[in-house]
Amino acid sequence: MMKKRIIPLLLVLILSLALCIPASAVSYIPDDVTYQNLNGTQFAIKVFTLLPDQNPAELIEDDFEYGGYLYSYADIVKEELTFSTQSQHQEIVTVETATKNLEDILAALESTIDFDDGNAKGILTLDHNSLQTEVAGYQSGSYTVTATKNYTGLDRNDSSYIDKTVEKDGRTLSLSNVVWSVESTTLVGDDLIPASYSAVATYSGTAYYNKATGYITTAEYNGTVTSSGISGIRYTVTYVGTLIEPEATPEPTSERTIIEPTPDEPIQEPGPSPLPWILAGIAIIAAGLLSYAFLLRKNIRVYEATGDGDEFDKIGGLHLNPGKPDFRIDRFRKIPEGTVAIEIDGSTARRLFGKTLSIHHYNHTLQHTVGSANAKSYWFKLNLAPADDYAQFAQEANE
Image (tube, rainbow, N blue to C red; front, side):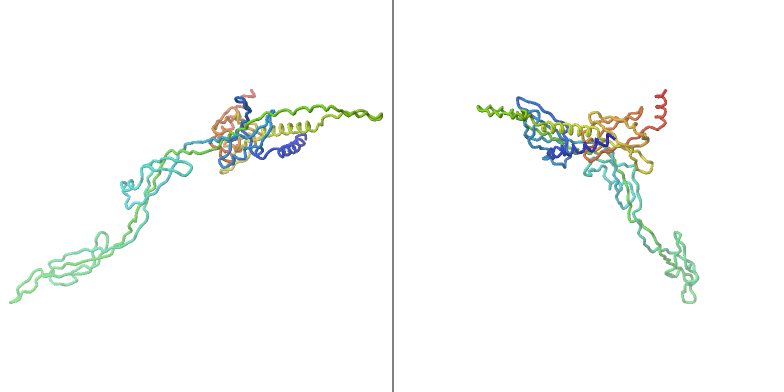
């Protein structure tokens, strides 16, 4: 009940405080603030981490007071935060050749290729064991098949002696032409007449075929690619402080007017107004509550795989201190197991960039290095040990 009453009060105080603070200070929370005196000059140095597309002009504040100094903007320094990660990549390439001869196929393929998709770059190498060749298509056609057959020793040039069909290479050819010749003659009286004949018979037919129009070969190229870029930009904003001189006490006047009190009125001395102290107290309380709420906000959410495809159910939220990147996920009402997904909000992920997280789950500790910080949130997955291991751990703990 008390918590429900405090939350509306906290919101009212935060809103009141926000109305008095410049918009840039509300929009961006500095990673670090340092007040220091160098060679007699007082400085206020504020460090922010922004995404590449955010406007650094919003970081510059109007003149402000702190610790007895009035600070004015001096300069801003930009530092790009880069990242570089390596991963294995595979590309599929196809080529078309007139034959399926391996030499022709290799001549059409490059031994290496340069890969660049705008995010990652690298050199990929041909995997000769991955080659797969298929026919690209077929073209139908026909051609004429011919054959000849000689006939000798025929007593006459009679076509009945000539076969009407012959077989060649499994095909039946039909008679298309016959050329007769006199093979020998004999003398009958005073005349020579043919004694025997020979013939050359020609046969023909049509053959059909399906001819491959070409061959398509699929090849794999593998290699290591490197992703690099700017994950964020660190801005260092410097303000120069001027000492605020205390106001001089006014000199007393030479003449004083003495007001005599009436007998019915007691003498009342005017006292200082408590309003500035009340306002200062409210501001301090609001700032404290705002800082408390920010420090304890849940900036990590834990999800458990449902076992249905790539779907996850939310288990709950946690608070992670970027200065101490470790947390436990075995304190929920429903203890997650199997495959879980961890979501870190963008501002926290940027502060954790390059750091290694330690995730404790009963007697197991898993680690993960934050490798990107340029999105609204950062995700990664973990595979937890089977539930039986934790049951045994709990039993040993109880004993």
